Length: 219
Image (tube, rainbow, N blue to C red; front, side):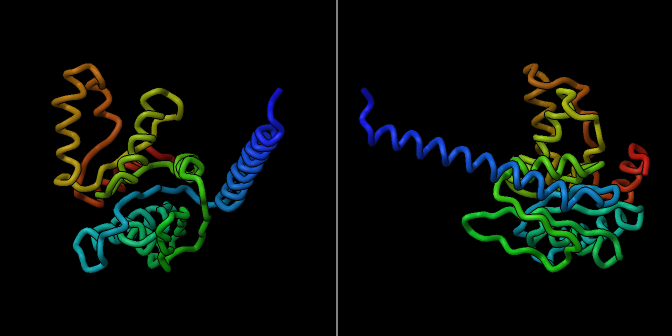
């Protein structure tokens, strides 16, 4: 016969899991409600560590302005660095600027260039919103978070879980090594195919980014 204290522990854990499920459902519903009326959007990912005085920050602002002028809303993680630059370009151009903020142990502040802000505790729900409400992805130089978002989109397209959409790697010097590694290691070893290289483009030209996205997206 199970000891009563152990049964209480099991019941308590079960209740915690039930409440966690309700929190997850609530966060999904809130995200849908906050973002359901935004216009055609491009999700932009990049490092939070880039400073406003750095050239990459300015080129990201320029790119975001061009996307906004082309009729796209801009979605970022809503934080500092290249996320801020992405929001700033759209905001200053009068376009729609959205930030999907994640709660982290070391709190990451929101940038001041947001028209719409949605808060998330769970990374997987936040990634769902990036995918669901974006017609294209622009991956800027960044760290593990940027790689995570990029890989998520690539594998979903590769496995036909979502319809293909434009993915742009902005910054040839930064992304060139990764592309070479895919060509030199993944493809020869049979872990990817030559066709998988067609899932994205790499460029330094903001105008090419906009042209590529417009070519594959009907507004």
